[in-house]
Amino acid sequence: MVSFFSFFAVALPAVFFVVDPVATVPLFLAMTARDEAAKTRGMAARACLVGGLVLAFFALFGHLVFKVFGVSLAAFRVAGGVLLLITALDMLRAETAKTKTSPAETSEGLEKDDIAIVPLAMPMLAGPGAIATVMVLVSQGGETLRGTVPVLLAIALTFLGAYLILRGAKVVQRVLGRSGVAILERVMGLILAAIAVQFMADGARDLWGR
Image 1 (cartoon, one colour):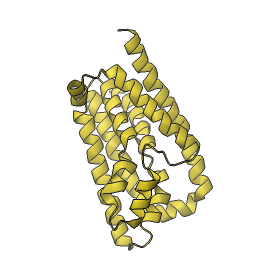
Image 2 (cartoon, rainbow, N blue to C red):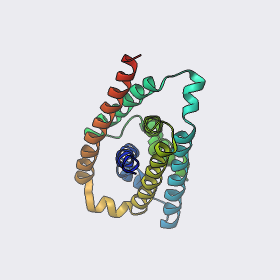
Image 3 (cartoon, rainbow, N blue to C red):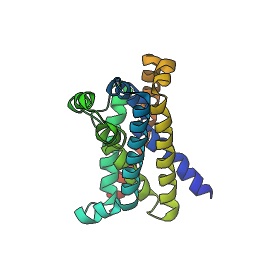
């Protein structure tokens, strides 16, 4: 049980920080500025449900990608670590990660009537970095039940937290303010950078040992 909880203690912050719902708050408020509260809550709920299901799918079946394309787990850990590091560097600069959404996608979201699936669920919440993270985490757990369940639990808790944050987005924005969000982003970015380096180090060690 100790290994289960220790792995979960690593998986939860890794998934939460890369999904980063706090950074989504300003964009979410801008995209839903003209919508009623009930519609906004509905879009947040559907986005978090879809985003969670997408990550759960890749956590459960992502190993098939390795087999289909002939990619080793070690190589994917290095690639996933690089992608996370890019995301972390954007967070350290308090900028919206380019791996999550582009200015064009953000602009399109401002004009859409319903942003729940695109761009909110994908790629803002369940983007490439988040997908790579859950796949790497499951591979580190050996693709066993003990390694998969903590990741699925981390995904569930992350998107529950994301829903609560988006549901109360106006309160979060008011309490934290732009400076508070930026500071929180930098702290999470620093931790995510350390996780990214660990991913790359583990992958490089496995590649070197071949």
